[in-house]
Image (tube, rainbow, N blue to C red):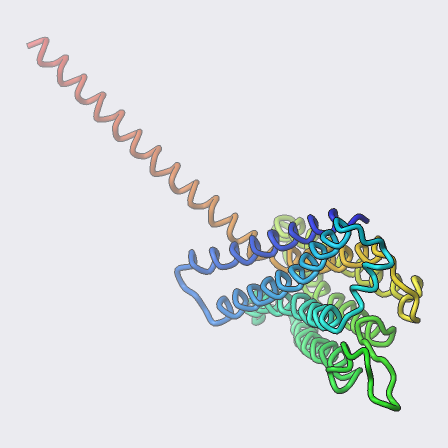
Length: 317
């Protein structure tokens, strides 16, 4: 993938993340009664979107820098050498931490939306929901801990001149941190996607039919995110760069793109329930408005008929 294409896609990811956060805020503002769970869900989604925007901005800024170097006549080997600096690796490390937040905070928003219906769940679904909350929390903490403490102190992640007796250690390109964080994300996704599926199966047939398309969209996007997680994990191993192989710019750009798709598909999937509520509210307002307009038109037509009838009676007299 060309760097210019990667840059454009990262900008698209920034726009989509901002739009999703804006829609979630709009939904909260249009609610007459705001519960703590509504506020928690909105705040969590906005934090996740903000982290995604920050992470995409890191890659976009690097894409701009690569294009500047290329415009000055630098070849790929020279550009790759320029990318191996403490500042660049510090930003990449920050972007990976932001990716973790952008994947997990939308899950919190999604679970907050289902919490309001917790009392209506059947016992088995309640148990699954409690387990899912615990799994989501533990996998989030596990991912952060793996990235943060695998190379300790944290400054080793961008230190190209390690102290005597220590080796270079960059968690963002080592197989164990990549494997663990990807597997934890997959496990948490599977548990979260199981909640709407099982909840749908427990609904009456007529009500389930109206909900199934939303659940299908959530599950479909969730599996796209899981698929991209596998791509990120296996690509790192099979590509060999976790074992010191230099990563060509084209492959680097594909890797960045895969991470963006993983994050954005997750953001959209876990925004679907709130987006459905927003669309439903809009339709109800339109229906109510059209009903009022129809009533006004009816009354006006009745008034016109009465006026015409009165005028005819006066003419007859």
